[in-house]
Image (cartoon, rainbow, N blue to C red; front, side, top):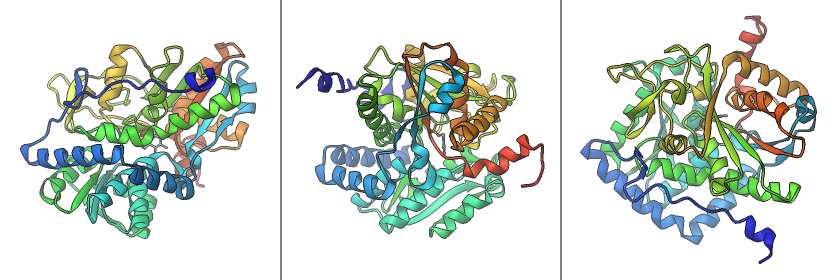
Length: 410
Ligand SMILES: *Cc1c(COP(=O)(O)O)cnc(C)c1O
């Protein structure tokens, strides 16, 4: 093996431990009725992880159906505009269905099929994970039902119609705040009594063990490719990785294979909303505290009584009160830095990227771009930065127009 091949081999970190914990975070805080389902999923996943047939089938779908590897693209005009380090975009926006979510949805649906389960349920907030799961189910001939808050169904009509077109049934959840956390509760409730024939396809690196680990592993294809690609193009490791953090799956997907490279800095960007006052943002590391939500211990936005705090972001995919437990661990250990970008900063980056590169980014990804715009001008020209472009912004043009054109109709 030459030096190149040697240094391009990632050092894996050992988390989670056997109890599904990342230090003080993670775990499996669920009712007794769900323990069976989670244990069965953990065992089935352990089997396919080293099963060549399963992994080859998944690789094959990634290549021929999703369009992987997605390009690592040198953003020349964006770089020149900022006048500092070289900026590359990892183009998850070019994956089928327009975002990274398909990586995990396809992996989990393939796992469901392997487990002999003909029905898949999922939760969705903005509808992106619902669309990705409905897509994977159509591809694999599985029955798909998606739980979605009644409020979100009203706000995201286009994605609701997409899911229906793809043959999925969208189930309206009218309890609580009628949004994502209520949809997750309903999906877990369903699963507790349907585990016999049903897989619950959870959409990010959150929830009870083994979900955060499974989702991370499926998304880690992003960083695995980026690592190889940056070696091909620059002959070395990058200096800085930047990704937005909702639940945290696209960020962990990019970061994971670089965690052992201490010289590679990583920044996760949360939704700063309109201000850091309670209820105006979703920056869990800036305004949250340790707490339990949806079956895992992590950072949670909450009031002094431990009630879940309300959140706001211009970007629906980042608008959530908690963050994946592995991020909580990486935050406390200091390995990854976390910051936030405001609604306005994200909207500015959304426009800059569109005009400079001819790429309309998702509003979620625009938070990562906004942070790049802040720090890249201060970095030496020989440094290399990779921004994860988690999705394309076609879904967001209406929302963006509302702000950018001050409500003018498009
Ligand atoms: C859902 C979504 C996100 C946020 O989810 P993560 O699990 O944090 O990646 C980010 N970008 C896009 C385009 C999304 O659809």
